[in-house]
Length: 195
Picture 1 (cartoon, rainbow, N blue to C red):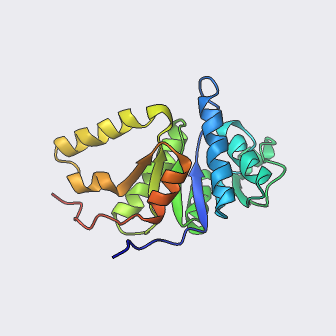
Picture 2: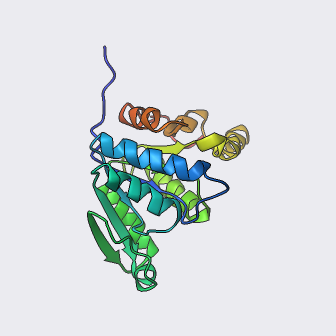
């Protein structure tokens, strides 16, 4: 019996507005943008031309992909909007931006990034855990970047703050196509969050 496959038309991508050390993360962001576009999956992201966000968008657009930017008014006023997007929206706040991105998306991916990236990812994972959304979340584990984060999740499990099954509530992959495939095949853990 084959595993059910989710239809993923749009992915919310959370990633850094900086590029990180060296060119590893830049290449990874470009590879993900290209892979999503080649598979006909639209991207919804924070709408800027800065850092990994801009590289992701540029790579997807170069492959003919659809890129939907949701930018907050403050960043728009600073001239941070990517000029070549398929479509964009200007919203009043970061909170509204996150909500809108999740509305559009069928799944979420976090690349390496800073505290904003982690916060966006954690909110999506939490909403899935609580059953408020059913949109799989994945970490693009470039060069093992997310391993320390997953070790912290293991500490939560060991200290009885999180059921072990909920570790499987996030997809962890180091290659774009493997990540996309795993999100499409994702089955949500059904164990309650309360221990």
